Length: 449
Image (cartoon, rainbow, N blue to C red; front, side):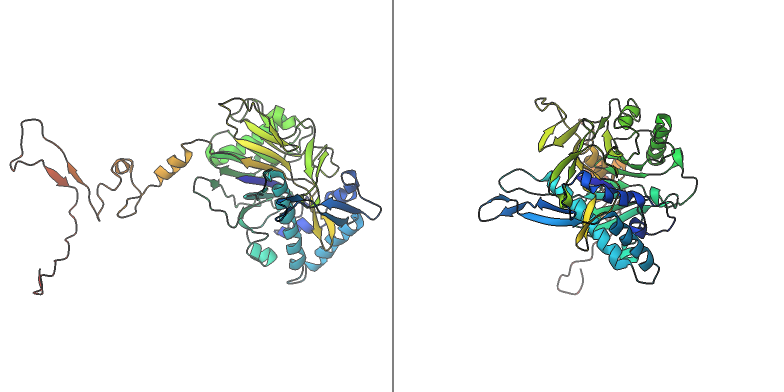
């Protein structure tokens, strides 16, 4: 199962709308002005890049060239101003916001497809199963966008704990995803309150394939204080499980240095050594549209700080330059829990040009296995039902496979008497806890039984 965390914007507006993602944002426009630091643009702000296409005749990958012109910072600000005006009119602005959100999902999915593409004769690609959008909130796409899903993803929950758009979340699931009950568990939070600040701030908690995950936007007021960061994460874990344990922390940590979260969580929250997705102070960046691969030194708008990361105390594989490492592959007992696939891009094509839709890159993590081989069995056992009446079974009922007192088909209990003893009729006794309903008489051809 592949999960992406992607922050969108940081306007701080109080409006209860997904549209805050397209309103004025100096950081997002800052990313637009810094695009030349990672992409080799010509004087016209144009980039030539290769698109992977599988040639069915030649039976191999080909890489035809495409071009895209990047918008300027001025054009980026103008786009936000245009939406800010259009959204105030009834029915206006939805088309632009829908186009923007489709572009966001398109770039996220292409980034994931590029990073998880197999290297076989016929390469296969995979899509993200869960997308958690930070700094954006909606529980009703029909209201915000006029559609029930966007880019093949539907909203399953949203969180707006403070009313401040910088600490909002939206969780999207792929529409064609077939989930078992043990695959994902959500812990919705619907209250909006000014009390959700700093250490008490709420974040998204999901249990995915048995792993408890916190998707965070660590408040700026505490992001540099190790003690307060631990308390913030511990509070969120306790809010849903009563325990201060987490298996994965993922999202915008606002960490001051690349190893801050990793070192802060050492011997905390149920783990000993935590592994970060930041490697050697560098992470890869998928090029525009999820095609080329670059290497940069940061994930924020200036590409100098690793705000957006994943961190776990469990064994993790890391994909870098098409190679997998991070654990001893010769160890027969090695059993990685996650794969850190790197980052998404932050630019998407909109009205013929490439625009930054965020000041942050997203993080891609793949869940390889259930937390426990017994997790699914345990969940299934708890949900076993009587084969006759379909009501849940008690612990004693589960041994029998049906209700001992099922009114549709009561279980007959038999036992053998001690050796040498017989019942009055010479047969072993039999009891029923409840009589069956009488069967209808058989027709003997005379109109009665």
